[in-house]
Image (cartoon, rainbow, N blue to C red; front, side):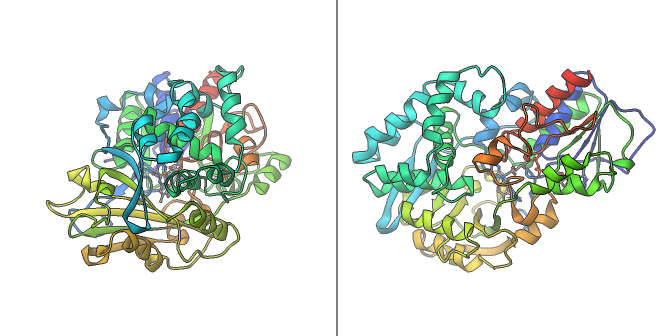
Length: 481
Ligand SMILES: Cc1cc2nc3c(=O)[nH]c(=O)nc-3n(C[C@H](O)[C@H](O)[C@H](O)COP(=O)(O)OP(=O)(O)OC[C@H]3O[C@@H](n4cnc5c(N)ncnc54)[C@H](O)[C@@H]3O)c2cc1C
């Protein structure tokens, strides 16, 4: 997508946004729609941050460099408020949100319907229904509450309290209550998206929320690649008079044009790096104490054909969790937290081209996968990840035409926000769910007048939902408007 190049300062701006990830884009779009003149400055050659797509392997193959599957995007009140479809965004829903193969050709299935999912969980069907049903039946109430966790008074306090009472538990506690391998594995895989030890508090909350989203909004992908989300957001920014400058890394706040508000789609480490002395020492110390989480190792494949799953029903889902039983997944995530390389890493696998033919030449396919690794790890996980795929799809390696890998260092080089390979803008444990980056009713505001944070290092945290940018922009409009 064409962008203006070089910092053009011949216009005046009401707001400057640094970083064009989904949060920066949503913040810029929201301010633009409110009539503000917005400048959006991005270090990379294109807008998008964690929502970019590139031909990483061979000509004709389109790969999502970072995010691929978007339950959070489809559910997000911020995204729902913006005319994304008018600007070309089309969600593609796979037949089934998630498949989770087990050894021996068994398959746990997260279907769109609660009853259909429960029916596949045998003796655990009733327990599964009891766990998710009240939240699925609440429509968007839980989604809206969790995505704006600091709204006061909370709009659905009883529902949120009920969710919190279960959600605060470690996922291993809930998984142990299931009798079948299928239910325990399915739930553990969902909870492992937290990138925490599954023995840690709030991991049930992550798993439960992703399960609820599968039933209420689905786990879609963007037609043409995740970049379509960023392109639609950028089109909204431009349609509302905003200017976008790519290929410009901001190295000091001093170099930005004056504006009523400056919003940083950056994590605390970069904020400290570009501070020109305007942040008070106490706030700087808070940012210095902010903790980052483990990293990721990612592979993209160009494939000669579809993935040869042992259980062919795995082809119904775009997302396939490869990690075996709940106990195995807990062990893998536990290793990562302890700084060890898991031998059989829990692997998140996506097969986009099975549902979106624009991703690969006719008859060919794309594969996308990553696993968690210790923060800053330099280990090459290619073999370990491919062994996990082969375990449930023997012959997979024979389909590989080309592969592209990225460890934590390459991730961080691609996007400075991925410190040590941490894709969530900071650890999302109980403490940093609320103190993100500090405990405050308005964590998007810094103590410096006119300076705001809008990245996933603010509530509600990681994922392509734009809520951090939306919350920050709404606060800016209230305070500086
Ligand atoms: C491998 C991987 C898989 C993922 N999978 C999913 C998924 O399937 N679904 C999902 O919802 N989420 C997923 N995520 C997470 C998601 O991509 C991020 O949480 C999200 O992009 C965070 O948005 P953001 O706007 O806060 O920051 P980012 O998207 O990180 O954007 C920050 C932007 O700021 C720019 N920037 C940094 N420093 C500067 C500077 N000094 N000057 C100018 N610009 C700067 C960066 O170049 C970047 O474009 C994944 C991430 C990765 C890496």
